[in-house]
Image (cartoon, rainbow over all chains, first blue to last red; front, side, top):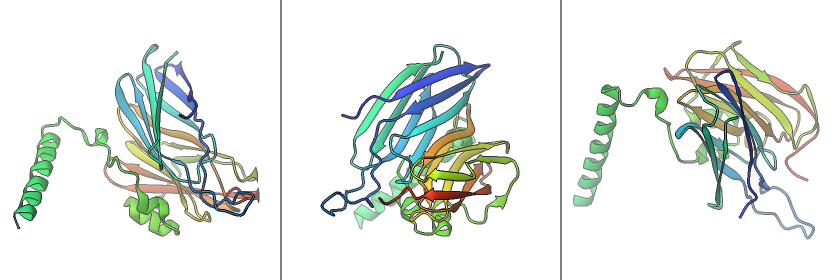
Length: 103
Length: 158
């Protein structure tokens, strides 16, 4: 199981500024290990962000997103205490979901 | 034969339900996410033009209302911070392409329910390349802007 995401959601006016740090190797499939074997690709393909129970952002990513990805989003109409749920799914079918509250 | 007919009927049924929902205003277009599948064709495309075609974004119009922030010089191509803000009304999607990467499409985001067309992401750049942001609006139009990023050490192989 992948490490938890670090999610921070801060309210500025009525806009939630959401930052998330995902722990993931984001292996491109182009690197080789020490014995010259290609390391197979392992990367996040999809991302879902829910705020206050509503799906607000859906993301798709390729191998060009950096290792341990950091994403920033802005969601209008959020309130303090709204639950932020972020979920990802990678090319191996692994998923992880974490949550935080808008503060 | 029966199988085919059944599939066709099912297809018609599903699409007419969606049409009815749209007509009734139950689902506003901005709230319907285009697809839930990872767009393999777009992400595997080796040319930006092919990736754009797979996204449905042919000939996006240049726009000064998209703010693309990226470093002019990236010392480390493995981690290049990019931010895109669209000031075009009713922007519902942002895609980021690095034109000289082996696969140009890096990431794409769809917005609904108050999410603003404003994203930050860190990407890998293989070499010095124009980075392009493509914005889709609710009426199905596409806009773009781009910025050249000089890369000192590439971030794809290694």
